[in-house]
Amino acid sequence: SADEVWAATRPHFDHLSGKPRSELAAELMNRCLDWSENPPEWLLSPEQAACQKALALALAGGDQKALHEACQKVIEADAQLMLREEMGQAIERLRTQYRLPPSWNVESMLASREASLLARTELTDLYLLQCFDQMLQSTTEPHWTRDRHGRVPSRYTSVGAVQVMNATTWANYVSRRDQIASECRKLRAPHEKAYWENKLNGVLLTAETANLIAELTSSPPLLEEVNEAWLLHGTSHQAAFGITDKDFDLTRARPAGLYGAGIYFAESVSKSDEYVKGKVDDSGREIFPLLLCRVCLGNVCYVGDDRFDKRKLEEKCIKAQEWHSVLGDRKKFRGTFREFIIYDNLQVFPAFIIYYMRQY
Image 1: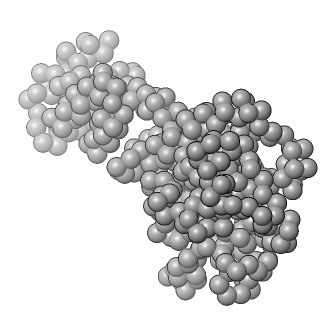
Image 2: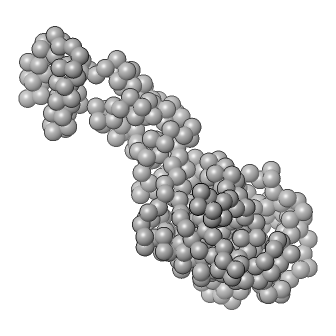
Image 3: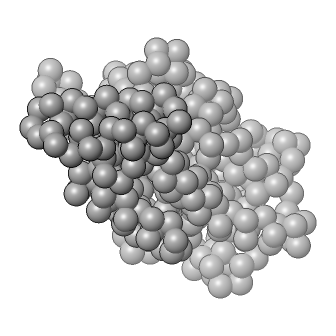
C-alpha cells in the first residue's frame, strides 16, 4: 500500500540532500500520480506546505478572493500536482460561486496572475477565425453618418480574435440577467422571432455567425426570453483592455448621446467602426479593436422615428423600469443603422475582442 511505501521510504529520504533528495522527491510524486494519492506532508517543501495550509483554510471559509489567492500561490509554487485534490475542490468551488460556463478553463484563469479571476485567450483555430471574418463581411453596410470621420471603408478583414473569461463580470451579468428574466415574465415582454421581424425591423445581422462562434467556443446559448443578443461595440485598444479587465464604465457615458447616457451597440461593423481607434503594428498595419458582446436587451423600447425625448428614454429604462433597453431604428427612417442602448453596465458581457483592418 502507499502507507507502507511512505513508511519504508521516509528514513532514506530524510538522510538525503541536494540533487539525490530532489530526484527521489520527483519519483515519489510520480508514484502519487500513478496511485491517485496525495503526497505525505514530509514530502512537501516548506513553501508547498504553506500553500497547502492556506488552501485548506480558504476551502474551509467562504471567501472567493481568499480562495482565488490561495490557488494562485499553489500555481506559483508549482504545487498543482502535489495538491491536485485540494486544487480540484477549489476550482469546482470557484466555478460554482461565479456560475462559470463549463467550457471555461479555470486553471488558465488562475495562471494568468491577474488580480481578478480572468483570462484573455488568443484563438488560433482557423475555421473559428474565418467565422469572425465572415461576421465582419456579413454585417458590412457602407453608409455614411455624421459620426464617421473620413472615408467609409468598403470592407473589413479580421486578423485575430481573443476570448475573454472574466469571472466577476460574468457572475454580475448572469445575476442581472436572472432579474431581467423575472421582470420580463411579469411584463410579458415579447421576444419571439416574429416579434423581431414584424416589430423591430428584422432579426439581427450578427445572429447567424455569432451563434456559430458561440457554438464553436462552447459558449452558453443565448436566452431568448430576455432578448439576449450578440452585438458589437467599437472602441480603442486601451479601452478594450480596460473593459474586459473590469467592465464598461457608465461614468463615461455621454448625456449628449443621441439616445441619452447609455452604452451603445450595433449589429453592423460599419456602425461600430465609426468609434474605433487603431494602432499600427510592427509590420506597419493599422489594426482596430472591436468587442463582440452578449447584451441582455430585456423589454425593448423601439424608437422608429426622431420624435423622442432622450431623458424620458433614460427614465423609463432606469427609474420606471418599464423598459430595459432602447432600439433606435435609424435604418428605418434614415437608411443608416439600428443602434441598441442599455443604461446598466451589468446588462453586458464582453466575450470576444476582434482585431481587424479596413479596406477602401
